[in-house]
Amino acid sequence: MALRGDCVMRLGVRVMLAAVVAAGLVGFCRGGVTSSFVRKAEKTVDMPIDSDVFAVPPGYNAPQQVDCLKLSPFLFSEFSVISSFFNIWVNCISKFPSLKVHITQGNHVGTSMIISWVTENEPGSSEVLYGTHKDKLDISAKGKYTRYTFFNYTSGYIHHCTLRRLQYDTKYYYAVGIDHTVRTFWFTTPPKVGLDVPYTFGLIGDLGQSYDSNITLTHYESNPQAQTVLYVGDLSYADNYPNHDNVRWDTWGRFVERSTAYQPWIWTAGNHEIDFVPEIGETEPFKPFRHRYHVPYKASGSTAPFWYSIKRGSAYIIVLASYSAYGKYTPQYRWLEEELPKVNRSETPWLIVLLHSPWYNSYNYHYMEGETMRVMFEPWFVQHKVDVVFAGHVHAYERSNRISNVAYNIVKGKCEPVADESAPVYITIGDGGNIEGLATNMTEPQPSYSSFREASFGHAIFDIKNRTHAYYAWHRNQDGYSKVADSMWFYNRCWKSSEENQC
Image 1: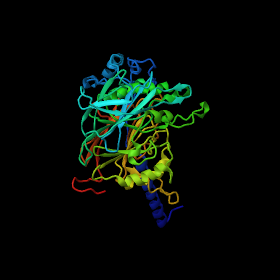
Image 2 (image 1 turned 180 degrees about the vertical axis):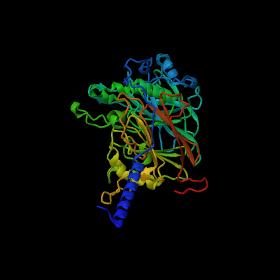
Image 3 (image 1 turned 90 degrees about the horizontal axis):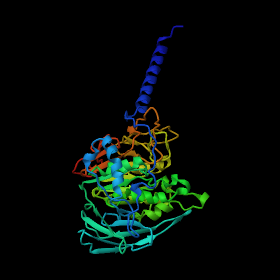
Image 4 (image 1 turned 120 degrees about the vertical axis):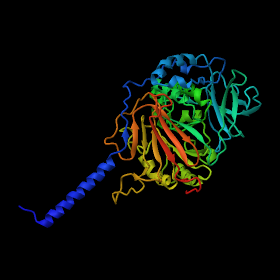
């Protein structure tokens, strides 16, 4: 039967509308780049407990961890060269014994440093000697020590000492193990907090203590730029061992000390720090983490060490807890509600957030686990123009576009993220190399919010240039440190020009 003219017209309009809708959906569903790089398929294996990288330093009651051995950048021009020198490097470490030490920022503005270490035989001294000349450690500070038990494990004596009233942008030497086996290290304080202060952060997450973990840390150490590590959670993976074998907390501490004794690492708690095992009588969440890793949470008015903030250089860094309560009226919710308005973008123009479980994730691993926190806090992030959110948890790499889903309304049907210049960039960097291996199964098609993703191990650098610009780069382990696998220039939304703060 022939169609009348008006029917043909209406049909034509419907076809056109359907085509437009389909085109829109296709445009929305198609995202950015899924890397064509394919890592060689091989199992991720933890290093044996008797590996040299875990060696206990000689000397009675020596404070523990592994030595700071910096390899020259020329060794890392190609991944094959990394592999060639890897075994030599591991075997050399035991010849350079050091201590079980890590440091982190000790107050809100960077003029204090928390020094932590472990002694095994007896408590010994909790004193730290320090100064600006390695041969004249003429200042002292006294700390305290703690111990804990976990099932059939008893920890060593875990010391924490805060060095206060430090000068900005100054190299300090410090000694621990006083009265027994003394070891000396150094660190450099940050420049005074300010609007155009350049500063470079390293980004590592979900490291563990596998052979791949070792390559990641070595690769990071070969990158000469970074001054402080922003660590997005999941440290030792001791909970992958029977009864959460806490000896693996000790080996991890010795493994990373070659960096953590010289650069502050800013700690975020992940799911592998929970250590809640009621079947063996362990019902205190985060027990090993809380005893071993102190952070300056009280300096920012926090009531718990899992959420806090610091200023460093021209950055304001907020650490959130994916595994502590964050619903309305909870301590974390109330703290963040009061904290964000305190950020003065004329003093610290860059606002960085660290958390563990990603809010935007296009891998079929831990999918939607961060959704409830996103619903609670994302409107605040958009309102306050957070620059970037770094997360871990998913053992791969991904960078988003600037998007938000704050218009979500189940009644009106608004349920998809949209481009939003006031929103952060979301970066998943849970690719440190732990025993659980890579996340390789991605959702298809790549969603529109995803700009770049790759299933590889690596680390990243966030290099703040001034109030208006910062350069971000991700380095996969298979490349030399100078080669960038993904990068982005950040343009500060509060300082679109250097003349006026628009926040």
